[in-house]
Image (tube, rainbow, N blue to C red):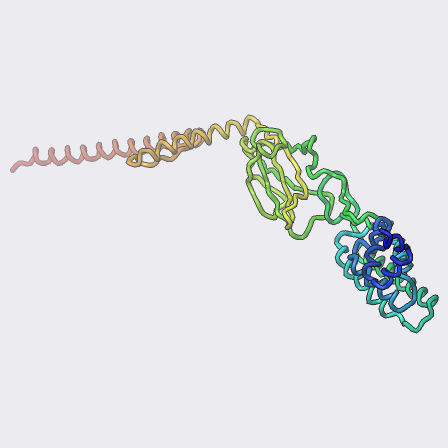
Length: 344
């Protein structure tokens, strides 16, 4: 215990001064809360930052703690920016090269000039980050719905991603109604206000004769890249809720939209449908009796017209037949009369 009393804070720092790595690790732990608010630390690892300040201390220009403070303060202007998520990897690779730029500063400079050169390097990298962002800025979130990855941003002051605060399901409480008359065509388009990725998969679903958004009621009817559905002609059994579900190449659901197709009938279409049903029944009966001769079914107007034509033709043939019979009888009577009056 008496030996421990002679160990002072001065002895501890003398020990740490000969063990730079341990000193830097302690500094990073002590300053961790403050450093996490630096945008530079969102894209670099602790040992990479320690390597920078270890080099600065090794060339005798400043202490490691002073180096960490300068870097932390120097990159603060980036804390308030929103980085397009598509550019995160590019900015990460760019900031990782910062330690090489620091090693490129001339060691022959005085301490003050070396510090100025370090601050200039930081300013150059801040400008480089802004140039990368401006080359391809993030899109704005567009209401009212959708998982808009093109508008996703990275908050540099918190090192977190930020997405649009909109639901994936569009018009969950309000359907887009489509009214169509039977036998006409129905066109449904899954149009969205935001930019879609290059590679998508669209699943069209259908729930017959029901107005619902619960996907457990739906049945998949088409899968592909088509953002529209065309029904031609539209029948009564096409009435119901249609849903389009858009999925990206990461299997994330980007958006869902719901449409209710209301099919209305008129008297002409109803009569036409009854006639089609009647014809189908007759054809099914005919196919069940293959020995019977196939019949041709005519409409009412065609049937009346054909009956009129058949009556006229029959009269003509009957008249010609009667005239032919009388002619034959006259010839036969003449022959008999000749033989009957022959003297021999």
